[in-house]
Image 1 (spheres, helix red, strand yellow):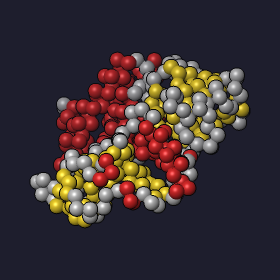
Image 2: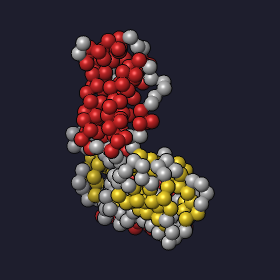
Image 3: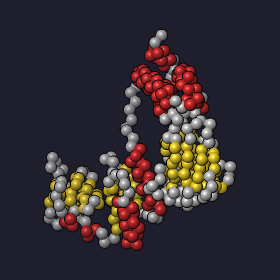
Image 4: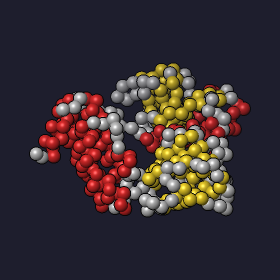
Amino acid sequence: MSMNNFINTGISKINSADANNAKAYLSNANNTLKHAGHYMLEVLEGVHAGSTHIQKNGTLTVGNSQENDVILFGANIAPQHFELTLKSGIFSQLRITPIDAQITVEDGSIVEVGQHADISSDEEISFGDTKIVVSRIADPRSFIKPGIRALAFICLIAMVPIIYSIAAGFLGTVAEAGSRVASTMQYGIEKTSSTILGTISSAPSQPHDKAFAWTVRVKLEDLKLNHKLRVSPTADGSIRVYGNISDKELPRWTSFLQWYDTTSNFPPLIRDVSRAKMGTDLPQIKSVWLDDNPSVFFKDGIVGSLGSSIKGGWKIVNITDASVMIERDGAIISLTY
């Protein structure tokens, strides 16, 4: 019996829930094998709780400054808080070295600046109001999924040689081959299970946009503006900040803008932030005409289209049925009507 027939026969004997579980299992196994020999840092507590970072062996630094490999904001987190040395051997311990501030390891021991500690994979590390754990990827235990029955058992048996090969030395070529096996099996299952479950489609996620938006929220919280301003990623990849601030809060908002403008690799910022006495500088919309060549009619009698320069040095960059976006000196503002 061929592999495809073997898989198809297995699928025909299970229900929809089992098929969904098996597909999820294979997807996780495929991703795990792709990163065999790497480490995963997971944030357990703090403002970044739930975030993860995958790192090859070597060193990485953690802190709240832009120079770190992992940037975390929170109470009492230093600019370059500590350094982790990740070793390739599966029985080697990890070394943690404080740089700017102390840390606490899982057994409660405090490691001061100038000292270091050797810890095992999966031990928790606490600093400031944040707690993390660093784990090796492709631990054989991660493949055990008690809730998956017949089909998952077939997949697990097929992967046993690969799992033991990874445990023996994280051989890159074996991991790559295992990834291809998992991908092939996953494709066969998805193709066949579509008969049972129907075609399943989902909107593509934008993890990078969400990560940028989260970092912006943390910065606004640090400046005590999070209760006034909200943040959301947009469909075109920009980050939108919107809300109202008072004149007293304007210096903090200016500080945020200076921080954002000097932060490399961040997407464009849409600034829907209003304050007292700011409205006189913005053009006031009377009506909008939407067709093949949309136009905006302003209360001062000016009519503009895409690309037109209008009052106050603003330029029209987008016209939709919900808002008109204008730009000046790199700042983008959305005018609603």
